[in-house]
Amino acid sequence: MLRSALVSRSLLPSTTKRAFFSTVSKRLQQQQQQHDPKLTHFGFRNVPEEQKESLVHQVFANVAGNYDVMNDAMSLGIHRIWKDQFIRSMAPGPGTKLLDVAGGTGDIAMRFLDYCKNIHRDNTSHVTMVDINPHMLEEGKKRFASSPYANTNQTEFMVQNAEKLENIPDESMDVYTIAFGIRNCTHVDRVVKEAYRVLKPGGRFMCLEFSQVDNPLISKVYDIYSFDVIPVLGQVIAKDRDSYQYLVESIRKFPPQEEFAQIIRDAGFSTVGKGYEDLTFGVAAIHSGYKI
Image: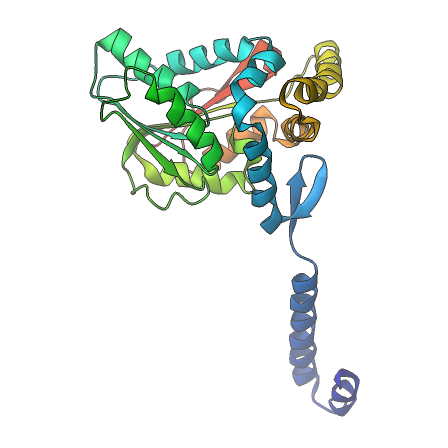
């Protein structure tokens, strides 16, 4: 049918022919896109974008129960030092409203409330902890149930997608944090733009994430440890090698520090200096931006 249509239009004026062939080309491109969906990375594998969320969901459903134990084992406890530095860098004041995205088991939320209580003697600060995975959020609820904040109104838990925080109003938060979660999102730029939306003018975006090690020797040792040791720890401790293989691979797929800092600026945030602080030779980094 398409061939006969092309032949029947061979006698048309040149401008009409160009318009016709342009329409046909667009239709063919649309058909190809329908059969060839957009791909994204899931670790070192390419998968259709619409599948990544469910794949990541399954990973964290698998690891939720052993998440804290594995963090200690994988980082030799260093993740605790990084998170302490993250909160010190935030230096929240009394009454701060924090949105902790991909809040997981509550590491950042608990440290935030402890800081406000211990430094300011403040019990008016509030944290809304959100996670796309209800299994992870349940672990956070368990932690807070046995904490001094169990019977207060300082905490709130929501199942939310970081790319579309449907229940978080515009300009409603003082600080937005996401720790070791943004690299698992399908569209990192959309996550940062959502952070900009929900922050008040003057609010601060903060991200703690694994990053790129520039020192060649340290990078080599880090690669050996990541790919040869961490998946084995996942198998021994959590009985799940595949999930930890993905988590290691996802680190290598995340943009390096300078590139991610530019994504933050492109979303509208202003940064101070280079916009990030390397931790442990760049194994992790604290990124920060202000909504001016």
